Length: 148
Image (cartoon, rainbow, N blue to C red; front, side, top):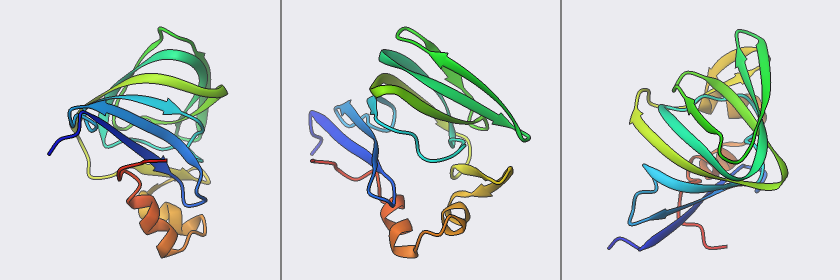
């Protein structure tokens, strides 16, 4: 049975809630409202193209490419279109930012992460950061129902 409203969270291995996602009628993996509290620690890509529209608050986004970075601040009404292979990280300005998130078709199997200016698959990145397999399992299961 599909719930009218789904609520899920991205929780890092250090138990920090970074994003809570809300969606109607089971569309959590297509269209959702993100409440962003913090970034996910480092530059990363996504396995799909996406569009994000800032509804409330603002954030700084830093994009990384080949060891070079560009930072820009975005405000309510900003429309950001990102490709699956763009590395970025965002830092909310204030306590939280609310965005409308529209996800495109999957292009690759997983996120990639940057560590010491080199690109790594997600699981290797977290191991290099010193997380245990138990903490990593928690990270990879982050998109379960969130009720807190």
